[in-house]
Image 1: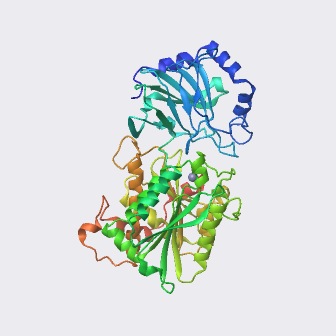
Image 2: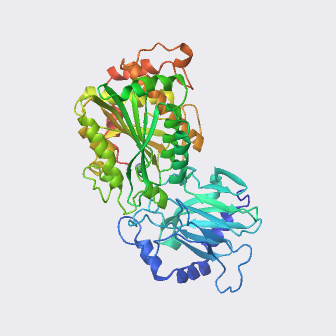
Image 3: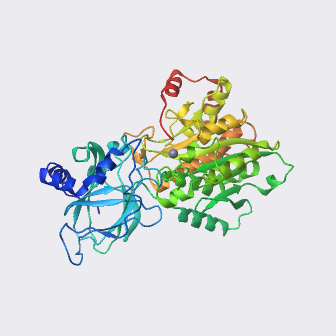
Length: 516
Ligand SMILES: [Zn+2]
């Protein structure tokens, strides 16, 4: 379905046309001056507070009923985001991301539909107000697209995507992509990455509940500011839940950053595996309690924000002192963790917060830095084991840091709160692709490969607990080398426990300053 014509020449012709540039700047007027200046850290984009709502874009001066080919843009739906459309000419449109609610600094996620297209209509869409400058678009990332008659998301061919500093937009970074519409009756949808909405999660959780599994509980831990559910899943063999029993606990959260939709696919992969009949899952349920909050920021997800909550807070900077009215979902999760941590029978062993990364490839982790070298090495064990199980997970991208800027993150805060037998990680996955050991080109992630990473995360807990002797390995051989895993995983990780970090790791630790 994507355009096959030579879009580059078309693009260059448009950009180099001075008439087009002056006409466009007249149209944009004062408000855009403000918008462009707002790029980065400060400023406000008062004009872009809402999404376009079935906006028909006809040529300037045209009156009368819209014709086929006068595109109709819409983002008034769940997780939708498109704030404004400027007509440049019949085949080129400037598109503006609607900034996060109450926080104009963040403009990355987009998700909108286009209809009323003409068959073989070729267009160039320029997304002109990204708040980020570094981007995987330079490395081959492209937006995802689907249409009514082809409902499976796919990535656009990278050759149709350009990312550059644009002279027409005050040298702002612009992502342009060419597209050829091919079916008049289709509604086309474009997005930054595969959407995973609040409603999708609700349907998924409801379908799990209908199975009446004896080892799965769903509860409402709290409500968001806009009264959406904050769901908590507990997965374990019910024997574990009696009050007097010792409990080993793994806590997982996702979607504190609402635009990081790959985190939801990973989280669903973890859940799917843990509730399955897979022998590894059964053993894990017999020994460990899994607590999962699949969507920590349901309002942000619903609204189509990239990083913030309804009130414009980056919740992953508020772990130290969350307010029950301004950050109710974070407050509820923190309270639960603090309360569990005070129970002498509960040993909270892992906290993993799942994110997606806009400039790195592969899956990887961030961990904390400790004075105690032995603890540092123990902390490296889980990522090393995961690296053995998941071909897309990179231990060399994994790093440990103590940046001041990350002091309010879940991983950093809980790393300080919990005792030295607990491990707190951020699990990151690329918005774009992964490189495996043997690959020469990046492999773009799909919804399925994101979920597979989740399944691999889940089964890595068995390797970890076997290594720490909680679980005795009496499984049949065919289970031990399950789903692409390496039989050498445990010996490698065991070595990791005895071998100190190398200088590369130390250097990375010092240099690491990516956001999450
Ligand atoms: Zn994040």
